[in-house]
Image 1: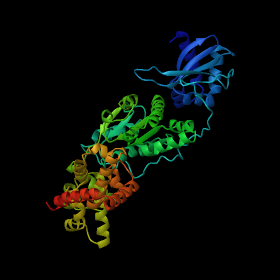
Image 2 (image 1 turned 180 degrees about the vertical axis):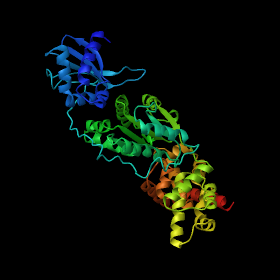
Image 3 (image 1 turned 60 degrees about the vertical axis):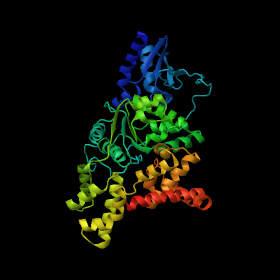
Image 4 (image 1 turned 180 degrees about the horizontal axis):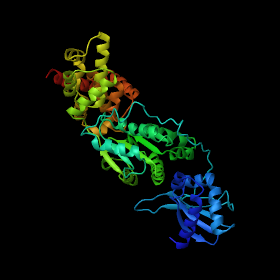
Length: 476
């Protein structure tokens, strides 16, 4: 980097710093790199097209003042904009923009490597941290997130991030674990804590389905710039269930650029997944490498003591004291995940209220015997998935994937059918156990199985054979 360019830019920064607040200076001017100074033209490199457009729209007077004081009244800027950050095999792709607003104007047009127009005007609406819909559940907090050996590292990292978002080494923070271990609770607790203590921060929680839907909608309506601008305003971005971005090349591409810009600007990124980054399949290598930049922490199934604490915490929040023997009975009996546990506790509360009885061990056993019987793994979701998978010679990963081949879809729908038949799970929870699908997908699966049993004798025989396996399991 030429010394002269660095000297000129440092002189400009001293002037700029006196004209903007510290946060704006750190966000919009510190990431800039001086490249060269040729006569009256200073070329600076900025991390993205959005970055360039933001400077042009909001800071031209500040830049103009600084450049004119350092280079004279004819001084002007040229931007070198990174439009592709590249990877270890390919260098970054840069385009140059002459400054277009406060200095000498130019008709030059930026072009990417495919020769397409890279720049187009956009209508930008700023987000207000006081009114933006962060999509957080206010009931999720650190206070009602029970700590145990199963989640201690993840919770401690979450607390650290909540105190100093974007400034710790935990950026990004990747939390992973199975269904119902508390990932969503924890990341939303982080978001709620930041909103409470740092009200000027813009916090946004979004799951991958919504992110992908918004992206596709923007793509179809030619509003990609607006889509990207929206996310680049966020101070804390929480992306839930990132594993379902697998195979979505275009969505990964836009998320890669949003990730880069947020990270370079000192913004905090939090993600959840069902597995660590090293086990994610169908992802660009450069995106996976960024997932590993910060901290990856797992949440495991809670042990007996942690489940006891969770049970007491849940009941106390509803104003009810549960007898120790009942809590211990449930902690031993519910051996799947925390969502099942919450369903059991809600059912217990409902029946106790309906029957106007005190909660005791006898009532718990009587009212919940069917639920507990299923959860004790007589016929659990895992057992159903394994049994159906073995029968059709399909592995569990394929059954939970987005693959729509008939040889995968039929076993998946059949397993959903038996989950509805032999467990007490809601349709939504059944779908959650099959790769995060919604209840309408489960309904479609049930209808498809019923229809196939009427029209396909071989398939009907398969269902009857599987039914015998499950009935023998129950009677064993």
